[in-house]
Length: 68
Image (cartoon, rainbow, N blue to C red):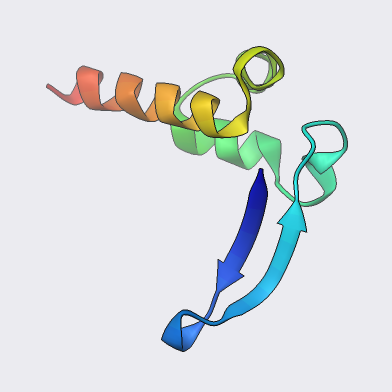
């Protein structure tokens, strides 16, 4: 998966290729887990099993279901 920071005018400022192995240095997993409303270990397990983008989508859908 590729992570890109986009600036004004849709110009990429920085890009990283994420391999789900040593990405903790780029993404603060604890902060992401807090934002998604889950534990860090649950998030990391889901990322390991399904990938980062799928894990984020899963926890976002869980949040939406709790709000309704």
